[in-house]
Image 1 (tube, protein in one colour):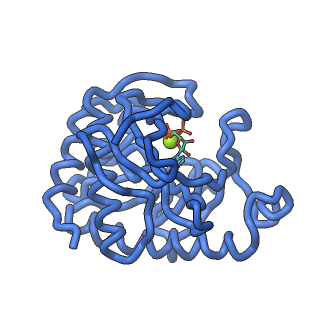
Image 2 (cartoon, rainbow, N blue to C red; image 1 turned 30 degrees about the horizontal axis):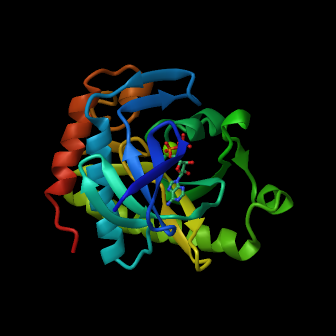
Image 3 (tube, rainbow, N blue to C red; image 1 turned 90 degrees about the horizontal axis):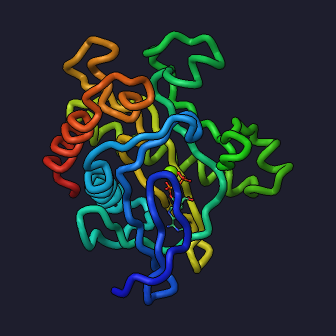
Amino acid sequence: MLIGEQLYEGKAKVIYKTDDPNNLLAQYKDDATAYNAQKRGTIAGKGRMNCSIATHLFQKLEASGINTHFIDQPSEDQMRIKAVSIIPLEVVVRNIAAGSLCQQTGLELGTVLQQPLVDFYYKDDALGDPFLSRDRILMMDIATPEQIDALAESALRINRILIDFFLKCEITLVDFKLEFGLDHTGQMILADEVSPDTCRLWNQAEPDPNRRVMDKDRFRRDLGDVESAYAQVMERVLAQPVQ
Ligand code: ADP
Ligand code: MG
């Protein structure tokens, strides 16, 4: 595979063209941002850790019947992916109340939801990734009613697979963000990444509300030991078989 010109640089990855027009290369970075890039820093080794964690989780999801953009991992911090046209929605699934859900509803941090909640946010940094209703998504022509249903259904299927997987890692999957895209055949597939940057993960064995955090909240909230938390997630995830 030849690495071609840079297509775009995001906050966590640089995306390159390859010699195959249907494939891209994602170079995972150590850069970390939070609060819509108002807070910036680096997490040493994050690129290779997130790339390896995401690879393993994409392989698990593929083995469970979910179509993803994952092709292979040519090096520790690089992932070959199918090129998609990204649907500009952040599809968030929540099992336990945290983050903006608590701020916007008054629910107490850690409240177990009766059933998983699917939220949509507009993927637009300039607007601050605002919450969108179904009607607003339709009004803005971002997705069709069928696509919205398919996104929510797929996100809930992925949630069930990941809850079980992380349970085996003795990690609680609190919530996570997904991005989907349309490949060159028009099929909707899971894209972007699934990693401690995009999931809230709590160490099951740890009751302390700060010490249990194993994800980017350690960086967001200056909880310390960010690298070792990511390393711990990687060790536990990679120890589980994908089949
Ligand atoms: P961001 O700053 O938007 O979070 P990232 O650094 O995480 O960006 O990723 C870079 C960009 O790559 C994002 O716009 C993301 O939507 C996009 N992307 C992810 N997977 C694919 C794919 N398979 N095809 C095309 N673009 C993708
Ligand atoms: Mg991103």
